[in-house]
Amino acid sequence: MIMHINQQTDILAVIDVQNDFLPGGALGVKDGDQIIPVINHLLSHRFQRSFATQDWHPKDHISFACNHPGAKPYDAIELPYGKQTLWPAHAVQNTKGAELSSELQQDCFQKIFRKGWHQDIDSYSAFYENDCKTSTGLINWLQKIGIKRIFFAGLAEDFCVAYSAMDAVNAGFESYIIIDATKPVNLMLSNQISSTEYQKKILLAIGTKYILSDKITVNSLY
Image (cartoon, rainbow, N blue to C red; front, side):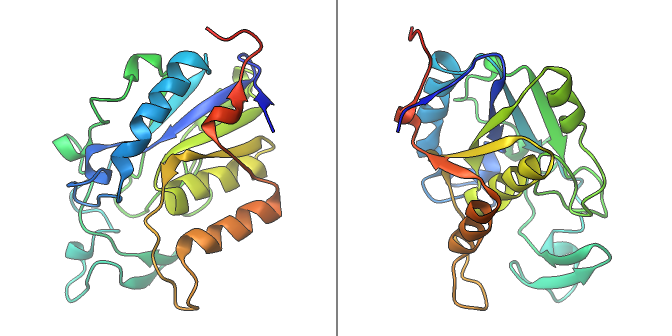
């Protein structure tokens, strides 16, 4: 089915397309670089409104395994706000790894929202830190400019993209994930289901839709 977008009330969200999440990065997502041409086409030929997010961690961030003696990457620990997966150090403030990819058409973004910069709270969602109450300011901005639908691209599909899409629905926006503009980490969970499958079930249940980029069009293509 073709999706006709409204260039005033629809927006493209480009989540964490940063050097550390691309192949060769500290937390590189397999084939993550392959989504960049798709995103650039959407930015230049479909969406007039867009924003990006940027993981922006202090070097002593609570989600880094190296900051927990005896812990390994991908271990899970309990923190005051819930279970936390520990990651290799990544997206450290003012490092090359934290920069958005130079291949992205960054001049198209109206705004860049940084997240995860509080030392004691991780942040997957573009909307809130993982305590589910510390806001990034994104909701207020989207409401102010009259956005109704959000189309998500970026990294990683089963973490920051998924949590952002969930929070979008909870905030009253229609939520779409662009299948060929995302890539997952795809961890195997304890119940023998992948993180991608697990998140997709939740997202579909709350009304998030999945769409291919070539099904997105505007009334007058250019």
